[in-house]
Image (cartoon, rainbow, N blue to C red; front, top):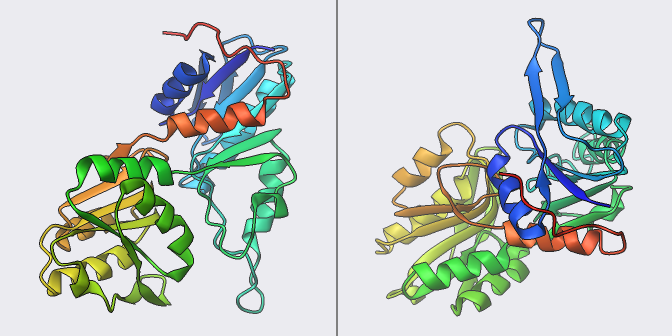
Length: 307
């Protein structure tokens, strides 16, 4: 069964990287809007009998999900043998319990919706806060690729005398892997979230790291309040060179500019979400996860890459 990769908007670069690593063909499609706002979908490549891989990172999911579902349905209707999804950022993981009466547990509802559209899922470092794995809410095979190795390599190659700083105690296991790969010590902040855009952090050992470069790391950078608060504290005790690294560059509103304005010299993110700050390539890890997921199927990973 041969592999064909279908990139949705803003995902062409990642699709090309995956095609390079997997030897798959990049397919051609058209998705556009009718004058009334409904979506038109057409696949111009042959998918019958083939294993279709849709590449669509799901930042801004409310405007992307319907088109993703229509594309998956079209591929299946045209005879695709399997339809999988590479979504390097997976949304709707935040609301995993009912915090207050009347709230919806939207992580569960979204998992049901996505599981009904595709046969498998590959993603990067989803926000598994109160869950052990995606299999608790997803009914399809779901494989997680991890960015810690790639981030650690970037730090080792680009930062002099780093110390890796995690956002809270829950991040310690992940941060320790990054630090080990970077050959650096690490510390984690004490954090108290006071609201969606208000957070208080502290590092009682901040002065201990004089002579090193603080590297603030986090999985999702949305409002960037945690990183801004941490950068402010380190700057106040005398650090001038501060680096911030995030896996998923969501950057709501002016968060990116505000982070740069908080005294952070370098802001770097993985290419799980397309952004000007992208500097860490995670495509090899996504490709490896795809290989692991489909290793029991007969796939051709050596087809010529489409130009």
